[in-house]
Amino acid sequence: MSNSIRKWIFVLIVPLLVFGILGSVGGGAGHGVALQSANVNFDDKASMQRGAKYFQNYCSGCHSLRFSRFNRVAKDIGLNAENGFSEDDVKTLINENLIFIRDAEGKKVKTGSLMKTAYNSKAAAQAFGASVPDLSLVGRSRGADWIYSYLNGFYLDPSRPTGMNNTVFKDVGMPHVLGNLQGWQTLEHSEGGEHGVPKLTLSKPGSMTGAEYDKLTRDITNFLAYVSEPAQLSRKMYGIFTLLFLFVLFGFAYALSKEYWKDIH
Ligand code: HEC
Image 1 (cartoon, rainbow, N blue to C red):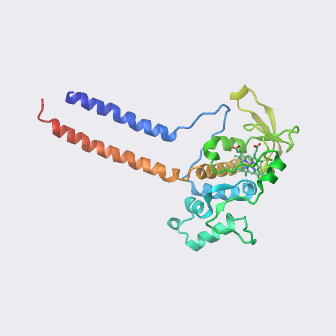
Image 2 (cartoon, protein in one colour; image 1 turned 60 degrees about the horizontal axis):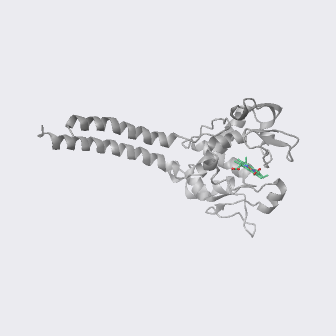
Image 3 (cartoon, rainbow, N blue to C red; image 1 turned 45 degrees about the vertical axis):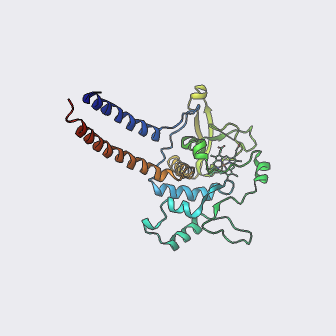
């Protein structure tokens, strides 16, 4: 193969590889229903901290995150030495904001415990006609946009036992636990069939404005998306380092190839 053909192969293949890798990092699977974009951002530690706090306050009564430990989560969402928090600070913050469950003796569980729920799953199945799922992996199984659309998609439906239905989860068993904050929505129409965006209007306002509620649900989504794959915080960084490494390696390989072939005509 002549030198110039080799050169062209390099020039064409390397960008293809790079874009291929970048594309697979950013891509997400499509869903049948029109979803709202959650725009999750794992660099926004303040949002993840609020999300964790809201989750513990509004959701952990029913849902567990059984693969996560309080202290690991706290570290990942920015409550760590790098950000100036001492070990004691972190313990206090975790105890005050995240831990509500107690052990058999009635004491708060340790900061290294798994994020279980106090709720009895059998009682839940009876109460809601559906078991309460653990949400450790929901960020992956459903995706962030789905969670965000779900938390924004509750609407009044008197035919349902809870009085509520949901645009992305038909006949859902979960009550609208954030209803007092968001207010109560009515479904105007779900025009366009499966792929249409359902139109909801607020028929009774809650204690938050629309923008405040969107921020709240985005924070919870951000947190749940992180929980489902904690390694992604570091994985993207490794990806960037790997690409940089390949780039430098390419420079050396190219120079070496030139050196080898310089006397052959
Ligand atoms: C009163 C108990 C209760 C509370 C509190 C609660 N949920 Fe649920 N949740 C349920 C039940 C029950 C289901 C299962 C619904 C079904 O299968 O019909 C569910 C389902 C879900 C699902 C769908 C999971 C899946 O993949 O099917 C998500 C996501 C979810 N809840 C998020 C939340 C979030 C976020 C909060 C806090 C804002 C919350 N839940 C608070 C009871 C609850």
